[in-house]
Image: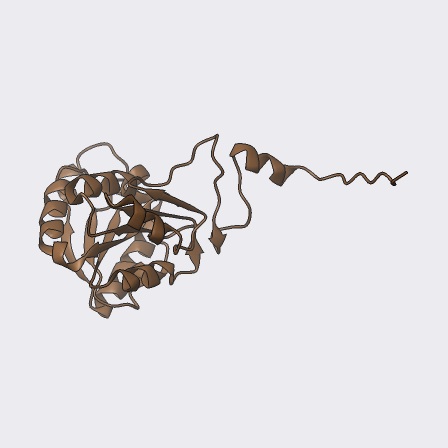
Length: 222
């Protein structure tokens, strides 16, 4: 599994990058191991971020989750997060979609502001349409929280200052890190994580070597 962090730097293009993140987060109704589940945004961009997120999310219909167990799990995580002090600043109204033939497990899109470093949004894999945003004061704090997870599948860093973005990438503990986009599964690129997100890779040239045995040939020197 994965609980991918997305770090937005001071030089990020906030609206453009949020659109990219929303699209990646809500892929398959948020039920994707490699979607950006934990967003870290500079505190000075808080007001702009919250308002833009609410506007953008209002255009999305609530997705259908895989089963009732998934709904119970998400509700429990959200409840625990609220007990930690996290606040829900957006929730879509799924009632207007109930008449549609979309299945019984309709679930609202929710967006939370993380207020506690022990929030379950920072620790668990949240498999569903939940966006969780942490507004940081210092970049070092965001990097530390991004790495403070048992997961290490993918991550993304957003910023026009590519030199700074590369510095941050080198400090992220993840198998795949992208700059100004979110990691995706491509047949020609290695796919894999670290920590509880797996061992080794699949896909790409490197992936072939995970499925073969090496034969060592020794020839004596004459």
